[in-house]
Amino acid sequence: MEPQQDKPGSDRELMARLGAGDKGALAPLMERHYRRLYRLALSYLRQPDDALDTVQEAFVKAWQNAARWDGSAEAGPWLSRIAINLSIDRWRRNRRRQATFTPLAEDDHEGALGNGEPPPDRGIRERELRDHLSCALDALPERQRAVVVLRHYQDMSLAEIATTLGMSLGTVKSSLHRALHRMRERLREVRP
Amino acid sequence: MILGHLGRSRQMALLAAGVLLGREKESALAHAVSCRRCRVELEELRALVSLVERDPLRDGEPSVPLAVLTRSVEREVERILVPGGRPRGWLVVVPAAAAVLVVGLLVPALIARFRPAPPAAVSTEALDRLERNLVREHAARYLTEAGDVLVAVAATSVDCDPPAGRVDLGPVPEQSRDLLARRALLVEADREAVASARAVLDDVERALREVAELPSCVRRRDLEHLRREVDRRQLLMRIRLMTRELEG
Image (tube, rainbow over all chains, first blue to last red; front, side):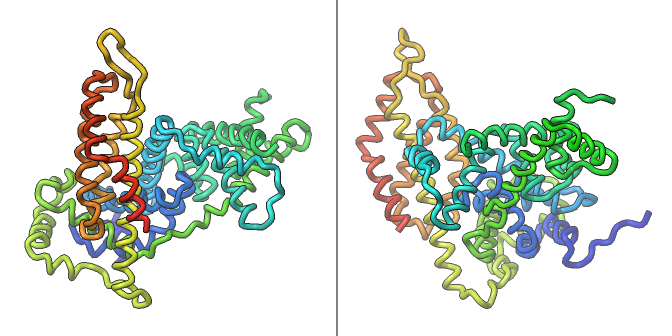
């Protein structure tokens, strides 16, 4: 089989340049992937600031590891893998932090969800939907949460999810099944 | 094969998630038609999936322009490239790449040449301003988190080993280590932008390092020493004031 040629400007070519220490490859690579990675991190972390930090960290990490990037792999899934793993780490850290420092705002938040008033406009309805989904996602262990995000926010296939998270196909299926049931139960509690 | 309810339940979830194909999908659909319980379950799961697909965060847009984010990443990369701070990944880089890096280190002007020009629509001044604001926001968040750590230290009173006079700090030392590990990314990106906060940042770093070195079950007198030091430097108040200033 003939060796694969990297087209100029392709992800592969940019990754190869990055791996050889060419920082000029960073900007076009970021331009191509930053929005997708931001949405991935935002769906997982639910906080814009955290998502932005995660994207930044992901590209720094991509640059650090570019020399070890397996040239036969696609750059997009590789970047997704970095971003989702960093999101999981950050979420874990945030949870530990929340467990130690009781956030006062959480009570306010619960109150806002439970006041029974009909939402007066679309903005509030959207916020309510977002909050309910955050609440449902919070009921999931970190890997199940990642499976849901990759499937329903990034539209990945089961095989892609398995590759991204380094899980078997069977584990992805059972994680997705458990996650959806758990989310449904949680939503029943917050949206009776 | 006859599936138990658990198997059917799994099928309904995978059907709702849109990942069943071909015969598996047909079989699950046929079952849902004939089984009321599974049909209800499928409808509920589909409603859930539909809610997820309407989540406004799906289409979230980054609050800073790409050019600012790119510069921020480049700056961090440059910081890592400083001798001694080089990532381990570079140990395997081919000599030619290493030569490029050395040249990059010795001739900063070369680095500037590699920088992509910001889009014409956004001026360099505007980008600088945005970047500066981003750095200040990061610093404010770092200080808030550091404040949380120090408040936890101040509030700790549960004994973990009463005869030895030790109190339980729980995960606080680990959180302090974690915060210190992220410190560079949060407050070192642009030292000028947070110059006014430097004294507070330095004192906070010192305090965090002390907390990071403590065991979870710490001698009360070590904790008291740390608390006195935080009080003496009025650190919590200074953190609050500086956070407000940085947040504008």
